[in-house]
Image 1 (tube, one colour):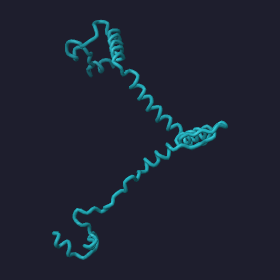
Image 2 (cartoon, rainbow, N blue to C red; image 1 turned 30 degrees about the vertical axis):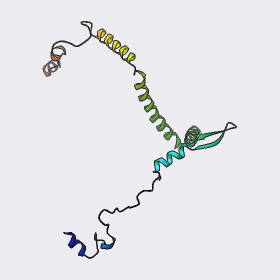
Image 3 (cartoon, helix red, strand yellow; image 1 turned 135 degrees about the vertical axis):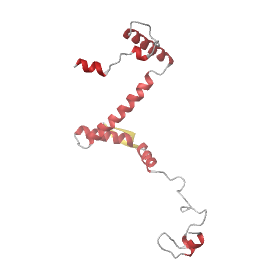
Image 4 (cartoon, rainbow, N blue to C red; image 1 turned 90 degrees about the vertical axis):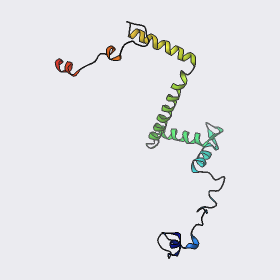
Length: 157
C-alpha cells in the first residue's frame, strides 16, 4: 500500500483519522518523563534511608527506617510470629552467603600471600609425590596416568 492509498482510506481498525496521526518526526510522548521524577526503587531507597526517632530502653535515639524494619522483623520472629521467621532466615542466609564469598576473596589478596600459598602448594605436591621434585612432569600424560580399560573391569568380576 502506498501513502497515497493509505491516506484515502476511511478511518477504522488500525487506520486512525489523518488529522490525529503522528506527523513525520513527531513523538507519541512529546514531553516525555518529567526531569527529576524518580523511579520506584529510588523512592523506596530514599524512604528507607530516612531517619526516625525511637525510644529504646528508655533512651531516645534516631535510626533509619531500614534499621527500624530490621528491628521489628527480628522482634516479631523472636516472639514467634510464623510469617516473620522464614523471612528473617531467608534474609540472613542471603547476607551470610554474600559475606562469606566476599571474605574469601579479601583474605589472600596480597603478593606476600600469593608467595606463601605457592610454597604451601609446592610442599603439598612434594609430599604427595615423593619420587620427584614438584613441577611440570616430563613425558606424555597417558604414560604417567594409569588407565582403566573395559577388559580389566570384566575380568575382575
